[in-house]
Image 1 (cartoon, helix red, strand yellow):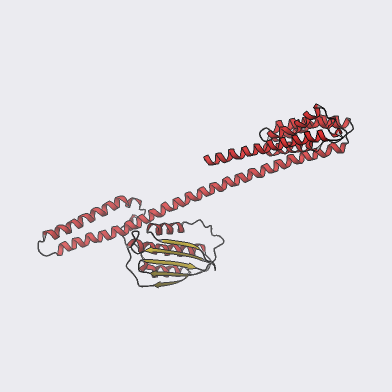
Image 2 (tube, helix red, strand yellow):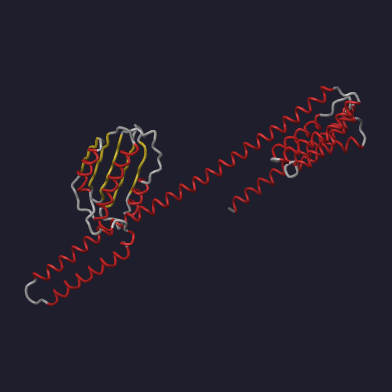
Length: 393
């Protein structure tokens, strides 16, 4: 915000400096023209009046942006008086330039009723001088041309102001859309993190519950007293129950589907069923598994499955008839999943989904590598590399 204010103030100073330089330059040019002119008839002479009128037609342009109506009144009065004094000769071009710039400033830097007021004052102030110039012998055609130029400059200024305002509105709208997109992305990340928390709650709670059950079963089949072993098994069972209760309090509050609690989550071993379901939906899918299957931690196994599931869902939603290749590679320290399709984007696709955000969030949570984007030969590709040992790797 502070930088934007400084930029605005800086541009305003530059603009005021440019207007001041323009006004001073025109004033000097007018005075030099008046002094060096061999025939000063176009100025109506070389007296102090002509010098004052030359400065009155040019110096007020330094305030043409801040006070456009006052500027046009002063320059029109000075220019009109100079035209009346110099008639039947035409006034110098410095007077003409000053009047045109003042008329342009009315259109470009005023709005609504003030714009029309400025136009009315410009012609209202200049009309008596034009009549006086006509009585001094100025041809009617010489008076009509400046009127057309001044009206045209006023109209051009109004058009440019309208375009400038529309551009500013579009820039503001673009900034608002970008802000909304960022907020939507943050909301999508929050939703995906909640989903991941729910799934990890199910995975860990299920495994801990199995530990409690196994500890209880071992205690029942244990022969003899063996008090130390029984105390250890009781401690395992008690700690496991407390852990499950704590997880329900800490993570269970984010659940929206309590009926699925403590159920095992899917993994890469369920890809055959997933691919079969997608094929039944009309998508041709090839599944390849490379390397020797390695035991994965529940979080890595679940995340790899979800990435493939979301990538296939995106193909169904956003691509026309396509063939998809799903590749799972097991390496020594990581598992890689890659989903590539050759489909073309649907014309009705809005591109506003959050699937890629969710996939990227999962991979980042596990300390892996994620890439997604369009392929050179058409279609889309999703790649994820997940360390087998999880984030600690």
